[in-house]
Image 1 (spheres, rainbow, N blue to C red):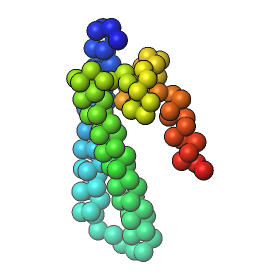
Image 2 (cartoon, rainbow, N blue to C red; image 1 turned 30 degrees about the horizontal axis):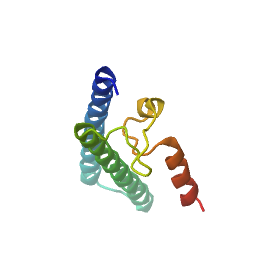
Image 3 (spheres, one colour; image 1 turned 135 degrees about the vertical axis):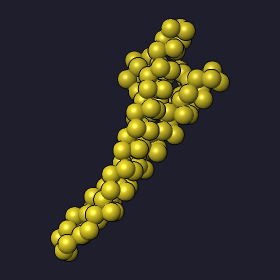
Length: 118
């Protein structure tokens, strides 16, 4: 990978990481605010419960994405960023440009997704 491409991809990963942290911070602030509001009736409680559950699932997704971003940055530092973690072949640049935190080449990712749906 050319140094210019790697620098641009690193910048993308770092920006996405900052975005995830900001989203997480906003979710946590909304969660605190909702806990402070008094609930009037059963319907309000059910709605609030669903909202909190939804927010918690977002945080799980954010946590997973953050982990993947950190792993990609580590792989970049170690010089293994372009290597598929399943087959060891090179991950195509179009895939890395689309999903900079990709861990597998497109073939291995498709195989994993097909195996997961069976």
